[in-house]
Amino acid sequence: MRPIAIPKYIQQLWEANSNTNEENIAQINRQYQSLLKEPPEVSIIIPAYNEEKNILRTLLSISANKTSRSVEIIVVNNNSSDKTESLVRTTGVYCVNETKQGITAARNAGLAVARGTYVLNADADSIYPAGWIEEMVAPLAPGNKVCITYGKFAFIPTGKTSRLSYFFYENMADTIRWANKRFKEEAVNVYGFNSGFSRIQGLSVNGYDHPPGANEDGWLALKLREKGYGKLHCVTNKTAMVWTADRRIEIDGGLWKAIFLRLKHKLFPSKEIVIRKDL
Image (cartoon, rainbow, N blue to C red; front, side, top):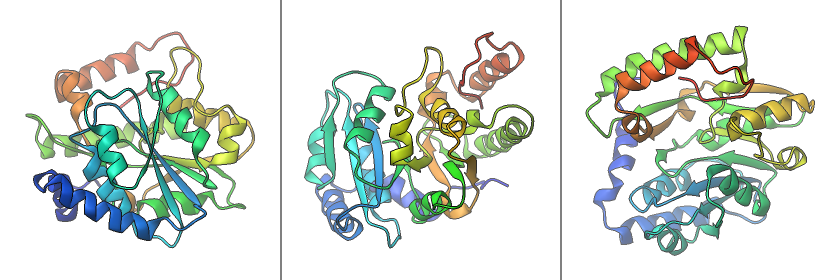
């Protein structure tokens, strides 16, 4: 069952923008110095395009994770015209510029410079709980025959949609994801802001490259599985629940319009056999 309310500590991180940038930057610096111990075992890739208003609280949440693993964070600045790049650099987090616009190019740029044994995908408008890194990486250990991990997420309202409405929406979506895994294609359940894989294995299948019409995250999962690296693994532990902004749903016109568009896609799917985003 999904949470009805946003946990207090997640809400506090979400409201971190009420602090001054200087306060947040200093805190990220302190936390990141404890998280990164050379050489890194885990690389977290965060594409960012004009995320000046969001990136610091995302970095606050990730750098506050509790793990004994050494972790590097890589923000890929994808032609931002705001202060995204300068803010990231002041935190001590590595920032690389990618001039080719698009999520696939940005994630590939991050993968190219990553040094960790494992790669975790994150987004610049999400909050990552303290147990996220450990829960997402542990199943990838050799011998588990897992090629990619993916986790659950919940929405933080930024518009007119209430958290209660999202509670029902997320539970309905979980049912559809269960059906995808059981009867259709589990790879459509993999989202780029909450997944992880072996860096070497990811490079061996040309990273996030995908055919036209497909999505980079689900297609990567397919490539890794078909290469024989193992199965897909859903992380269900509540300590790994990611909280993300609902701005994409708001862009679609709100929750009910978004549901209509997604149901339309389910009932009248394209003839192309590709991995697309569902609920």
